[in-house]
Length: 278
Length: 253
Image (tube, rainbow over all chains, first blue to last red; front, side, top):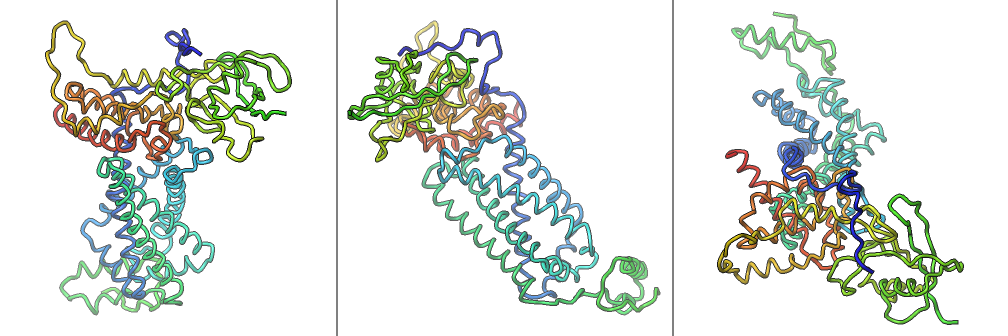
């Protein structure tokens, strides 16, 4: 049978089906590559930091509190938080949802490994997004303010995980997030041409798998430590020490600052603040 | 009674006509492929319930998996009709019907024939050719090293069947992704010593909307390609060069 000529009307009427490449037009290349890069730096880097920091829960509430104090003592910490976590994360999440809903997964027809991973990257991304929204809201922006009360960090998480549903959500989200990150590194390397050949991709796949499993196990160990290893952790292991006792007498401005902060109404402390304003 | 092959074919008589499924029973012969099956139906276009119908329209030409015309959905999966063997398709289940349908992501012309001109337009927009047609003699072509030849040869096997695009989850009317075949041809012609003169233009074209960035690396293309082109490798290599070109352009243009 002879090859059928394309419909004559295609020149005049709009073409049906998938449209041809818009050569050199639009900015989607930039946005897509920024999305890809932002998943590695800074979001991926932050995820690694977060899991390593949380692993301090293995050493107990005090060690964890000290880690929180350290992170909050970083210079320009609020600027760092917005510039390297919240803003890139929001972009990555929103653009990621946009990408996910434009794909037409077909694992039902082509059940191949790469195709499953394509779908898994979208599913784990959505799981991570939903989890992170509630996690940031409940752990960062509501309840005890941890930047001001680092000693309450362990207990805050422990209260959260005392709900078995929440524990299940944390475990699922830990697996989904580390999965998304480790396969994301693999995808980044493949798509940016760092691992072009089959062998390079396969080898790098093992590297990413080891990294992902290690991060996931560290995260799950931290959850274990919070829930089971140190039950009934004190509400605040670093109660705000009476300022006048530790501050040099000369640093009056610092004293008043510390006191006014610790007098905030929402503090939860195991030990009452006794010192009056100096 | 001699054995028959049951076939169910998704048909429509023109792009806007309603879709109907017609069933056929074709006498079995050993070593049939889907093209010969469709040939049998054309010889005797009577459906399984005895109704005379039109022969099935489909694209084909070489009948040996080299022209790329006869791609269709065979038992739901995109394959070449000429290299899809009935005995293998029915492996163990001779009563199981074989289903044939047109490729799902291209506009249907009639029955199993689809309009795949989007690939041709994509190849044109990335200038997938060696620009040697001119008004004067360009002299001898530059030398091609065997190492380059070896890397180019598999890419030159592309038969433009569009199966890589059909199976790609990112190739759809929402992304309007260019598809693996075009990206592989960019690598092929960028590696040609004479064709590389258009390298930058090709890389810039592929950074447009629907370009290389839309690849989601599901790797279906490389799994499904009937000619085993190293498509994912080509996508990796070309994307790297597109990124480098975009960065260069950002600072110099």
